[in-house]
Length: 157
Ligand code: HEC
Image (cartoon, rainbow, N blue to C red; front, top):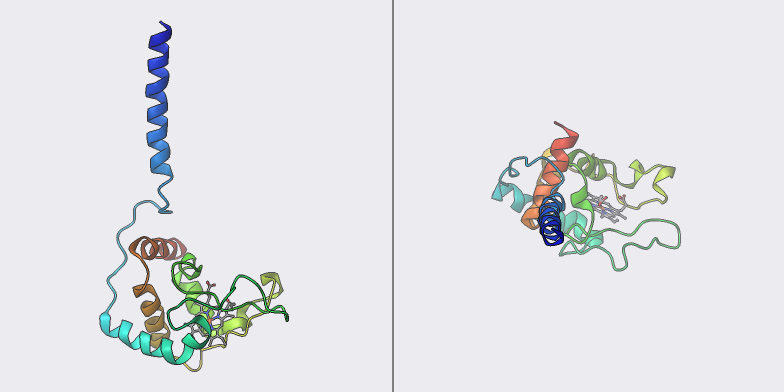
């Protein structure tokens, strides 16, 4: 009888572990479809814009500034990476577009620091901003691209 109980407990544990494994899958949402394919010409256009306007701060390989998680002595944030090691991919398209359009001026006191990120809303058209974001997305591993796509879908269902 004890043996039988033991066996039962093992099976139950296996079932729970199986469920836990699924729940731990780090895709945030409900199995939404794959992100749309990126247009290579637009990605190439975005790469040029990135090199001209963004690389000086965010790094030629999207690696960000050294020690980017620390703030500068004047309380301003350092430029974060746009690759998988940063948090650009945590944000929806709308938030990323706002970041590029408005720059550091979008950050209020609640943000805990200021930012020297310029506002590109006048310097770049909406299409150019979308192109530079598509270039950044084109460098992400598939899981991260999928995550950011799902965050975007949830923000604009
Ligand atoms: C003078 C330096 C500088 C330049 C040039 C610059 N940035 Fe930034 N950027 C920053 C800093 C500092 C931050 C972090 C503080 C903030 O969010 O404003 C930032 C934040 C961002 C964010 C938000 C990222 C996140 O994870 O929250 C995006 C998106 C972004 N930049 C894109 C761009 C793009 C695209 C360009 C070029 C068109 C660009 N930046 C040019 C300094 C810069």
